[in-house]
Image 1 (tube, helix red, strand yellow):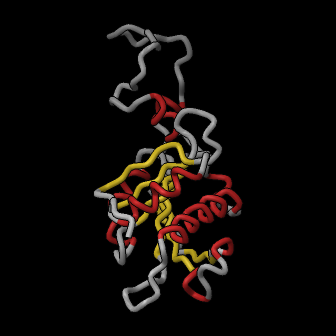
Image 2 (tube, helix red, strand yellow):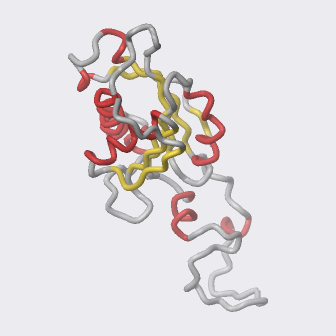
Image 3 (cartoon, helix red, strand yellow):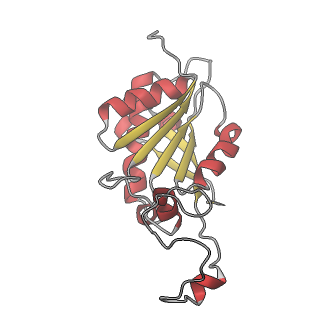
Amino acid sequence: VRRLPRLEHTCVTCFPKCVGDACLLGIDVHVPSAPPPLPDAMFPLDGVSLGGGDDDDDDDDDDDGVSAAAAGRMRGAPYPLAILTSGFLVDAEQYASYARRLCSWGYVVLQYNKRENVAGNALDDVVSAAMIRDLISWAQSDVLLGQLVDTAGEDAGSGVYLVGHSRGGKISTLEALEDPRVRAACLLDPVDNTV
C-alpha cells in the first residue's frame, strides 16, 4: 500500500451552497502497490505439472484463499474506488488503518476532510453528499487517479464503493441512492435521523 502526498480539491459543484474554504477538501489517497514478482512468475514452466494435486483451474479461490476477483484486482490497475467518509467532526486520519487494510485488498481508497466545525459552519447532508459525487468525478478526471481507478462499474469488482462511519454512513447512503456509479456501501454505525 502506498499513500500519495496529501491533495486538496475544491468542490466546484457545491457552489453556492458552500463558499470559500468550506468547499475545500483535504484528501488522502491510498493506492495498491504491486508485490514484487515471485520467481515462478519470472520463469514460468509452461505445460509442466509439479504434481501434488489436481490441475483443475475451475476453483474460485487462489491457493492462499484470496478470491479470484480480489486476485485479479491485485495484478494491476484499474482498481475499484472506495471513498471512506468519516463521522461528524472526526479527522480522516482516525480511519487510516481501515483505509490501508481495504487498499491491501486491491482498492484505491480516498479519504477526505471537510472544513467544518460546531461553531456554525457545519455543512448540511445534501451538500456533503454532493461533495462525494464531486470527488468521484474528480478521481475519474485526475491525471494520476484517472489511470488507477475504474469507476464505470461494468465488471464485477469495479465501480465505486462508499464506506462511511456515523454521519459519514448517512452521507454515503444519500449519495449511493443518487449515483449509479456506486456499486455498494459499507455503513459503520450510520446515523439514521433526519434532523
